[in-house]
Image (cartoon, rainbow, N blue to C red):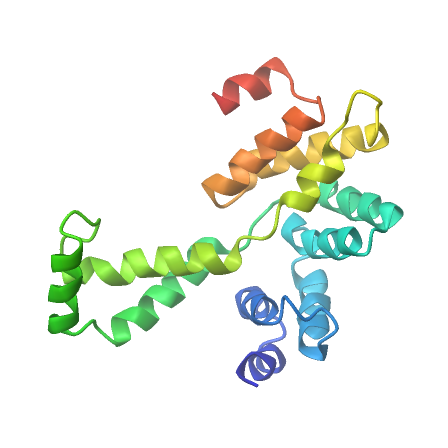
Length: 201
């Protein structure tokens, strides 16, 4: 019930709404998910990541026209963000509030002497980054598939929108994965320019 309570308590806070959405993302018919997505469409409508939810739902339903509409909405957006940095800082604070016990830290270090964390104080940041990456990154497969133009010209009618979405992710995505996916969309839709290639390199 906690995500649903949070969604109701902070309807104008995009980060809270994203966290609530993530908590319900495998239950698209859940009222809490629907409410969070409606709130995000209202307060974060210029964010292409919001319309990724519609794209993934349409792809799951094999609704070709709805997929095209979602990509069009993404192309009209001004940014692509899943609020990675803000959510990661919140998760880091949660880890900092409950420090790892010294005996657990010692067992971790003995099991993996070459692991990234060289001190116990680094654990919250590393754990928060890993946790956030596992939680907030959307499923990009539907976007890449919907923008792939094959030898027969399937999906060619989406080329302009896919170009705009690809460049949006590449330039404004708030994770390296988002940026890479943007360049991948440009590649599979055959809409990249020499400038895009240079930026990708």
